[in-house]
Every structure is written in structure tokens, then in C-alpha cells.
Length: 295
Image (cartoon, rainbow, N blue to C red; front, side):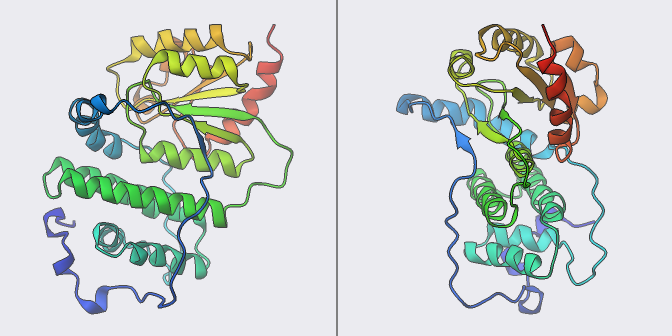
């Protein structure tokens, strides 16, 4: 097993580093996900970092749940999680992008890159922060790079299915909680399936309910990382249903906690739960006809 305390750039010898293209690359993809952006309150930034972001980032990254997709059979395209972690934390951001570009050029499926490379590295960053083998600044830098790579691959290599537009979905967390890298990845799966995507974050219940009252959404998906605010989520789901512009709006729950507690969907008033982020769009697609049949 890899000793995470050994994760440092100095431990990687020259032959272990991937060969990278010399040509300069432009990694400024357009934003594929529409986000609601509330006005920033400067006096709350520091407080939010200390009271919300720092305690939650490690848990959010470690608790991401994704399907157990097998590693690619082609030995020419291995997923070197430790090596890619070093690139993500390194001084040259282009090296991490080039590593992923190299995998794609070899024919590695993008969904495997998402699930077997980007997601494990995000989890590893969370573990490293919890074990104090890296600091918060490095975790923030690493997650930011992972998100840019995710958007770049999703925008340039994941073309939406050539089908009629399915619907609009809002993917978020309980207001006040930080969005996880896993939620951003699920959003890319929905976009690839033909959905119009919106994500938060939302600082309050009113911000979220005001949005669903103003904009039409077929579905709202909530990501749950723990069981500390379930009562609040139940009330929020009731508020969404009551104030939504779409009187037949559907509600989906996702997150690793649902593996052990699948009954939460019924308890909290949701329509279904999805423990597999890659298959959540198909479950949502199957739910739509049932929502239209509601009185």
C-alpha cells in the first residue's frame, strides 16, 4: 500500500514522470455548467472558511461515492493515481492536463478517466489533508485543478447525446454546505446525457427556493455527505415542492450515506435515491414520465 507521507515531488525520479508534449496548450474551456452566483459578502468569507470549508473539505472528498468501474484492459493506458496526484500538486499545471490528454489520445474512455483517475485523486487529497501530509492550500489548489480538468474533458471530449433535450435539473447540497468534486462529476454525467444543468452553491434556503420559483426545473438533486442535517433537508424538500414553478418537480437524493440507509428517500420525501453517480441520469430519465402523470 502506498505510504501517503511519501507523496512529494522529490520522490519522483525523472524516468517515472510522463512524457509530455512540448507544444503549448490552451486550457481555458468555456463553463459547461450554469451556476447561480449570489453576491459575495466580504465579511463572511473568512468566517465561512474557518467554520464550514475547513472542517468539511476532507470529509466531502473522502466520502464521494462512484461506481466500481473496472480498470481498462489496455496496459498501455494505466491509471497511476499516485503519479497523477503529484502532478496535480506540482508547480506545472500543464503537466496534469497533458497527462490526461495523453490518456485520451491513446483511446482511454473519458468515463474511466473520471471514475478511475480524477475521483480517486480527489479522495486521496482529502485523506492527505486529514492525515496532515499536506496543507489546506495544496488541497484547494489540487481540487481546483481537478475541476478545471473535469470541465475541459467534459466540454471537449464528451459530446451530449444526439437526442431531444431531456429536461432541466438543479444539482446542489443543503444550503451552506460546500459543493464536492463528486457533485461536479455527476453534473457532467447529466450534461452528457442531454440535460440542462444548474448548480449552486446556495447560502440560504431562500436563495434556493427563489431560484426554483423563478426558473423551470424538472428535477432537483441533493447530494448528502452525512446525516447531521437530515431534518433540515426534509423541510427544504417540502419548501422546494411548495414553491417550485413546476408543481410536479421531482427530487433525487445522492451520496454514499444512501448505501447504508436506502430508506432515506422515502423518509425525507424524495422520489428516488441514486448511489451510483454515473447511472443517476438514467434513473432521472425514467422518473420523468411518472412525474408528468402526477395529479
